[in-house]
Length: 405
Image 1 (cartoon, helix red, strand yellow):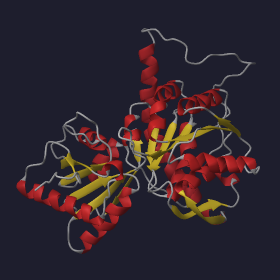
Image 2 (image 1 turned 90 degrees about the vertical axis):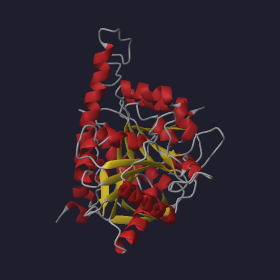
Image 3 (image 1 turned 135 degrees about the horizontal axis):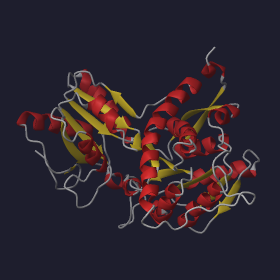
Image 4 (image 1 turned 30 degrees about the horizontal axis):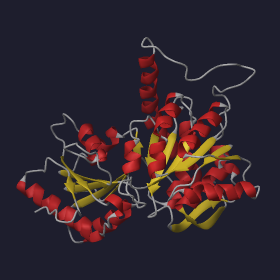
C-alpha cells in the first residue's frame, strides 16, 4: 500500500491565509514574528490562536514593524529555530534590507506573501508589484494558485530551505484577497506527524551556540566578498534541482504534486499564454473553451519564480509559434516591462528556433480580468502572428483609453 493511501485526511474549509497557518502548525515551527498588514494578517492571527490553544508550541513575537518581524526570524533561525513570518505590499518593502541579510547569512526562514499593490496612490488590492521588487534578494520564491497548493508548498518550502546544499530563505506567494480571503476545501492530515516526517527539522546546521562560539555576517573585505556572493549563486542553482526533487517526493508521499511549470493544451498550440498565481484559473477556463471551438491555444503557469526555471520553460514551451507572457507587475522604465516576460526572453536568448514572445501586463491594482479579457488577448496574439510583427514593447491591457488593433 502506498503511503498516501495510509494517510487519513481532514477536509476543511480554509482561506489560503488559513491554509498557510495550518501548514505552519503541522510543521511545528518554533518562532513566529508577527506584524499586521492587509491582506496577510489572518495568517498570523490563526497561528496565534493555535499557540493559545496549545496546538502549537511556538514563541510568538509581536514586533513594531515588518523590518523587525523579519529581523526577529533571522535571529531565531541563527539560533537554530524553525522560523516563520508573513507579510504583504509595503511590509515586504520595509523588510527589503533584511531580505538580503537573511539570504546572505543563509538562514532558512520561510515567509508567506499575500501579494498586494504598492503605494502611492494607496491600494489595498492585489497585484504582484511587491513580490517582483524582491526578485534579486536571493530568496527561493514559489507562486501558488490554490489554498491546497499553499498548504502543500509551505511544507515543501522548509524542506527546500533547510537542505544542506541550499540553506536559503523561501517565499511562498499568492494573490492577496483573490486567494488570501477566499475559502476552498483543503485536505490536511489528521495526524500531522507525517508532515514532520516529510520535512524534519535540520538540527545539524551551523547555529549560534554558547558551547561552540561562532559569529555570522562579519565584515568581508574585497578579497572575499565576491566568493560569498558566488556561493549564493551556486545555492540558487541547487535550489532549482531541489525544488523539482522535493515536489516529486511530496507527490509520492501525499498523492499531490505540482511541478514547477504547470501546462495545459500544449499539443498543436500555436499560441501559449504563460501567467502565474490565482489568475491562472481564469486563463485556463477561457483557454479550454477556446480549444473546444478549435482555437490552437495553450496555457502555462509559472510556479517557481526564483530560481527561474529557464530550462523547463524552453523545453515545455519552445514548440509554440508565440508565447504571450501575462504579468501582473511593471518594471518601470524597461522597454519590456513585464518581469516574467523579461526572464522568458532571456531564457530563449540566442535560440534561432525560439517562438515569438509578446509581453502583456494586466490586473494592476486588481483591475478586473475576465474570460473575455483572455479571449481579447489571444485573438490579438493570433492577429500579430498573421502580420508577422511582434510588438517590441509591453502591452498594458485594460488601461482606459489604450487600445491595441
